[in-house]
Amino acid sequence: MKTFKVFRFDSDKDKKPYFDTFNVSVKRGTTVIEGLFYIQQNIDPSLAFRFSCRGAVCGSCAMHINGKYRLACETQVLDIKKNTITIQPLGHLSVIRDLFVDMDRFWQCYREVKPYLMAGSPPPEKERIQTPDERKRLDDMIDCILCGSCFSACTVTGTDEKYIGPAALLKANRFLKDSRDGVKGERLQIVDGLHGIWRCHTIMSCQEVCPKNLSPTEAIAEIKRTMVAKKFSGE
Image (cartoon, rainbow, N blue to C red; front, top):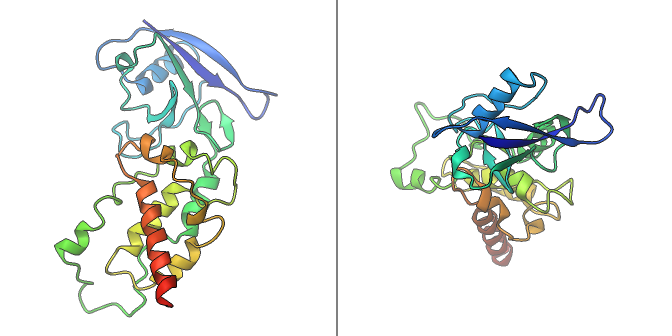
């Protein structure tokens, strides 16, 4: 038996948030998301949270669990040594209800970096060729599932509402390193500035919570190096 201490707040009727506690019977293999489903289906059907794939692929169920941002669908309850499982929503985002947050700010930052290939030239007859080595350069960035954990763990997104954020900057670097992309100058211009790469404090909080072990911090550092080299070369 574990105690689930769950953040509760309904933006339509509550003046301030509070915590509810629920006793949940668990066994080997029980995940946090399964515990939340048990609460919703057997104790309190009003509990709200986001989920989808339940296989650590979609990133929908990212939340703050016992001091760390994690995916609820892959977090084993019995791996958490404490008897109380404290669950809170993603940070730096408005809470709509309970563990369900408004992701608009996150997606706005993501759209800002234009997260799609822009070749800058007419399409070829068949395809834009990319060698295995060129493709390998993207390996450390393409597995982002856009869960928002890095965004919520970042101290800068909590103090600067205009900061683009680690997830978006990781994606920006993914296209800067893509051999098929032809607008690298435009991409650098987007992320260059007070609310872009130079706002990162290199605390590495984003890296510590990434469920796919990616490194937004390193991606931001790479863009900084690219930008410095570009400015010193006079381009």
